Image 1 (tube, helix red, strand yellow):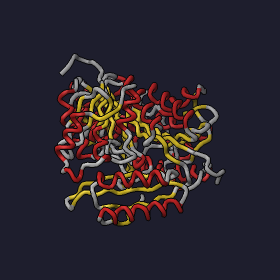
Image 2: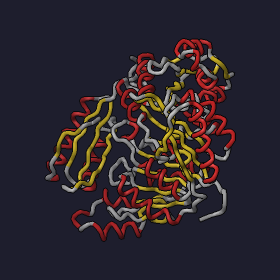
Image 3: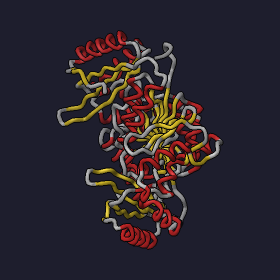
Image 4: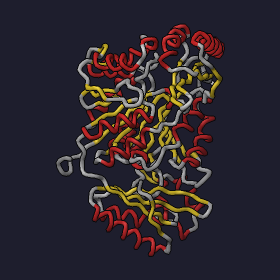
Length: 253
Length: 253
C-alpha cells in the first residue's frame, strides 16, 4: 500500500440538521472508522455540521488542509436542503453547474415522466470532479482533490465507500487487542500508566463500565507493532494478577 | 427564559479515540441535542476529537468563541488517557492543579485503602472553575466560562447535564412536526422547495428512505412559529394529494 510509518489521516464531515437535532442517529461514523482503519487510514477527526453554507465551507476548507482525506456524508439529494455540492464548489472556488456525465446517468435511469428539475439538480457539481458511482440509486457522489462527497443514506454511503477504498493510499494496518479487567478503573490506572510509559508506541485506552455485577474497565491496545501489543496485554494480565482481579479477552472492534 | 429571538447555540465536543476508531458508538450527541432543544438551545455543531492535546485545545478555543455554550464529554477519568481537564486549562491559559473541593469530595467518597494518585488526579482542574456535581460516581465535572466539562459515560453525563440545565439561558423553544410522504423524494422536491420559500422562517428537512414497500420521505418542519409549522404541514398535505401520494404524521423526534 504505502511507505512505512507515513501518517495517513482522514476527517469525516457529517452534514445534516437531523443529526444535530437528535432526530437521526448517525450510523456512518463507526462504519467509516472501521473500514478506513482496515486499510491503515486513521480517522483522526469528525465533525457534524448543519445544513448551513458558511458552516460547511469552513469545515471543508479547515479539514482538507489538515488531513490526507476528507469524506462528507449527506446533503446530495434532490431537495432544497441538499446544499453540499454547491458549498464544496464554493470551498474550492470552482464554478458549479451541471455535470454532463452525471446528467447522462440520471437521464438513462429515470423514465422520462420522472425526470424533473429537482432530480436533475443531483447532477450539479463543482467543475472538474471525478464521479463516484452509486450502485444503489444512481445519483453519483464525487471526488474533488482530497475531498470525497458521499451520500448520507448508510447503504448508499457504504457502497460508495467500497468503490472509493481501493483508490486510497493506505498506511500500515493498525492492529488492536483488548482485555477487560474486573476491577474499578481507579485501581488499574496507576499500573496502566506504567504500561503506557513502557509501550509508548501504542495507544492504550481505558473504557470503564458500571454493571450490576460490579465495575470494570476494558483496556484497548492499538498500534502498528503487533509484538508490542502482545507484550502490553501480557503486562496487563500481570497487573490484574497483582490486583487479584479477573481478566478476560475482549472485542477490540 | 430569555429575550425573544436571541440565537442561542451550543457545540458538543466528544473527546475520545474509542469513538474515532469505531469501537464505541457515541450515545451522548442525540441526548444532548434533545435536552438542549427542549429549552430552546440549538446544538449547532458537534466535533469528535482524539485524545490529543493540540486537537482538544484547538476545538475548545474555536468553539467557545463561536457558540453560547460548549459541552465536552469524555476524558475526565483517572487513567493516563484522561487529558481533557489539563487541555481545557491550557486552552484558557489558566494554571492547572488540585481543586480543594473536588479533592474533599473524593476523599469523603473513597475508603482510605482505595485512595490513590490516579483517583485523586480526577480533582485536578483549571483554576477558578465551578464544579458540576456527579451524583453517580462523585468525581465532579466543571464549568469554566461558557465551557462545561462533563463525563463521557452516558448515565453520568446525563445526570451532570440535568444539573447544569436549569442554569443555562434558554431561547425560544423550538417546535417540530413531521409527516411522511409515500412517494420518491424526487417527486416531492419541487413542491417542497415552494413550501420552504413560502415559510422561510422554518427549517424544513427531507429525509428519504427506501423500504421494500417503496420509497418515501419524512419531512420535518422546525422553528419557533407554531402557526407557520401547522400551515406548512397543511401545504404538504395538499402537495401529497396533488401527487396522489399517501401521507401520514410522523415522529418529529
